[in-house]
Image (cartoon, rainbow, N blue to C red; front, top):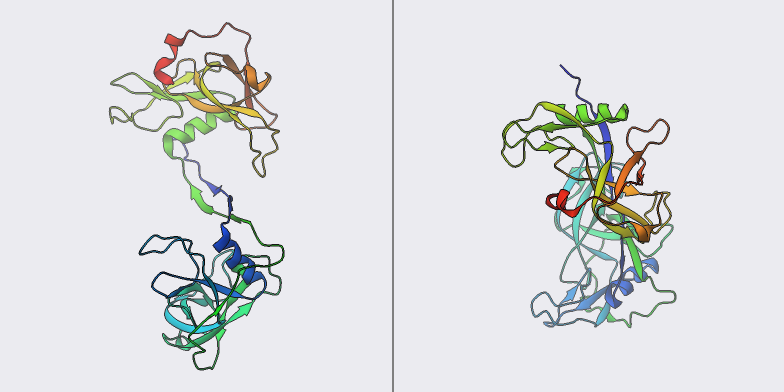
Length: 315
């Protein structure tokens, strides 16, 4: 029986977004150790602030400053912190209603153990030593022996020097991926500069990469078929935004490629031709970097373009 492969896999997508006037003021305020909320149509103060009233949907712009102390409304103990969480030691996730606010803010509470945490306990913000205009400017909350502060927050114009106008929201998933029998065979073939798919015993379509079952018929597949290495560009896009950690100059072309003998197009980068000369029907072949386990890119073969009718079902 073929050994099934298994390897760590990281899916990461740092999302860059711009901020409107309310969120910009809120995050810039955190950098300046100031917590801002926004007053809703019914007079309540929302922290974190939102740009539109959750009840009436009207635009909200009246900013106010609330206290850095508050009350825990609910909590959950985290005995095993994960990478990039606020604290490296066990802590409590808490919802804290800051004095002057009507809603609660989610963050970490530094406490020696779950017995030290309870709903209704008083806490205060512990500010990060270095602040950049992000929610992490609040390092965490800490227990604080005090009475609730004044209920009426002070008006604030939301004006700061050098306001924060954009943030990067990281998203990352780490897990161990086992590709299964069919994809393990596919990956091992790629290591030998070969591409194999599997044929459905009913509809006779060849799927690359193989899935272990025909997505159309729902029947298990086992017959291996070698395809390519040449193929046809069925459709493509021009990439104009450079991705982090990807050493490819823009613009470049990413395409769906129907390898000869396959009934499913896979994707790959097109190089060896100006980006504005890539076209549907272009005949291409893989280029392998030394020691690579998959093609680095595809380049034109010099053959005449494929007729549209030969690949139209794969567009």
